[in-house]
Picture 1 (tube, rainbow, N blue to C red):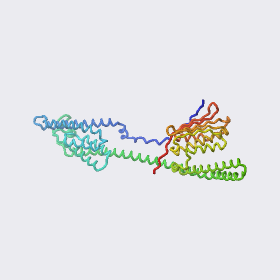
Picture 2 (cartoon, rainbow, N blue to C red; picture 1 turned 90 degrees about the vertical axis):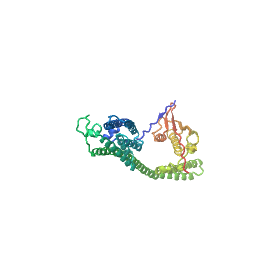
Picture 3 (spheres, rainbow, N blue to C red; picture 1 turned 30 degrees about the vertical axis):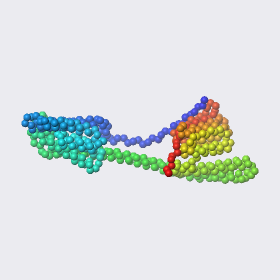
Length: 442
């Protein structure tokens, strides 16, 4: 029974913490739910409608010789009561249909004895959400409705039929007496109410603009940070590429040169000439791989679309043959369905993982046979398994091979397990999800 050790998961990077709400009265108001705000508006509009209808009934009875309402006046009051319900209920859609709600709530007070409270709320919502000439045309309609409702109220003969007269009168509450009211009073009140509605709408509109500006600024800051990080990483890649080219490239070229000289000097010794040829070909292949690596470092974005720079799944037999020619017995099974449809980046990852697993086995268990299994397809992904018996209890200093493999697996959101079983056989099991090749634009 084998024991598999799971690799450590990759911790995702922590992004910037979003900015919190701006403190103040507006922030406290924002915490109130939409339903609660709507109920508060209904209470205010209901109170205004009750006062307006009560004043209208009093005005009609004061002007009547019998002290009773006529049939037309009764019908008008009942219609106004229904209109009050309509205007209050329409405020629920003030954010989704602001123009329609403003038009309805402003038109009804012009035709019925209603107050214009609902139209003032609707105008604030309209200014909050919209801009342009039609907004101010709607504001003019609301101003007309407000002035009409206030002058209608001021037309009452006594304090009992006019809210404005009762508020400006010095008589005792509940006492209905005739009062003269200046024409400037309803006009000043209308201007004050309209200014409050417009000011609230402009304030909320500015808050929306500020939030949008902050969002764009945060997005721009994040883009700047990403670009700065990319530039920094690219500078590091360029530095690494220069060092690798100057140091390793020089060493590999010398190795290839000396291997070629040894191959020529071998003469009739076919075994020595074959070994020298393998060294020379390996050095040349290493040079090609080094050029591909340098191209990845210097142009990582372009490399993702350069399939010629990547090994494919069809190259797996090559790396297996190279391992066998190097003196390590390998029992391999490679079965991949629709390998030509795999994403080139996935193919490169599989190739490098297999290459590193064989290298790791050759380093820590030289001469021991290796069992390699590579199978998969679009339905099941790709499974990679290796098993090799360790030839010593002390295989040497640990390297970075398994760490690099684990990083490749994590980049593809795959899984990896590795460890020794009871028979002292080192096993590695990897699964990578399948990825289809991107369709190139014609």
